[in-house]
Length: 179
Length: 187
Image (cartoon, rainbow over all chains, first blue to last red; front, side, top):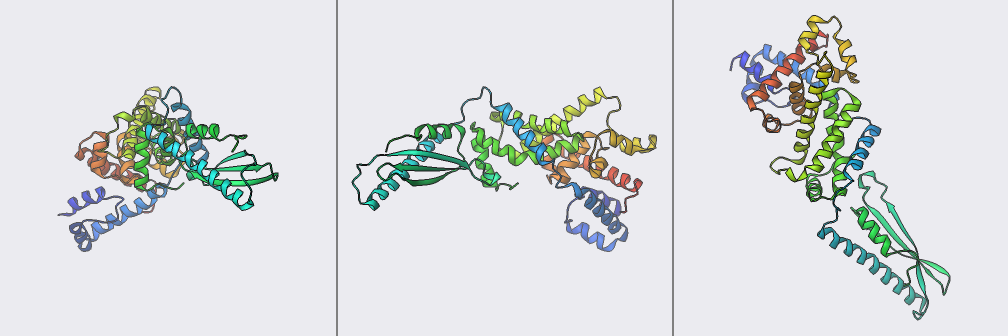
């Protein structure tokens, strides 16, 4: 390749770190083309200062929220048969935790299960990490009227919980449920 | 913001394409930054770029059934964003007789081409530097240089011939180099 052909190729490799072997060989033996490439690399470095450019977090949040507002109306529910199955599995897991924990509690007290306990609280919180905003911690608190004490029944991490799933869960595990 | 591994991204895309809004919302949070960066570099206008980025995701959601998996989901978004931005720039030019700034013309005819960049509300020095490229060249330059797409990917994404894309990139580099020398950048 002559110098004109090499320099034409160099412009196509602008921004790249590696050059093909034949071009590299030419640069090793041609000061003019080597100088041209070094100049392009310096220009690339200056322009690369904006490589990580992103709008401000507040602007991004505004745009993200806007998308959410615009895709909500008149859309079909997002729960598919598969996710509905997962939803029931999760709720079953919550109920299992409550049952096992309460039974263990009664055995520990060596009492017949004649006392009445109710669900007094269901706490649903989102995970702190903003990258996992769809993760929810669900904890259930039980009150035992025979001892007037409270008992932490269990805690479960539910990831990717949809609004519909959350609504279903809270409807089926509400304060006042008798156990 | 943490970036998702490809496998996790693919899973979210599968769910979103099936109509899962939660999965789609996660994709929006992950990809809004790069898409908005592209639209901002192309328009130089903060509000317009955010609107275009938002329009991109809304269009992707509404047309999710037309997504073909041969191209990656991110490339598909870039394609939507690019088309929307080019259309915006076309209509913007119709409203504004001054139109885009051609570097060569600006240098020759205007004693203070920086003033034109200011008019385009470009916040960044580098953004202002590339703003003078014609729209198509600026898009090719952005996708190649900042998004690190291959020429072939850009050709497929923009529906242009591979040779046209390469020529466009090369011409963009020549103009940018010339402009840098005129502006007194130490190269």
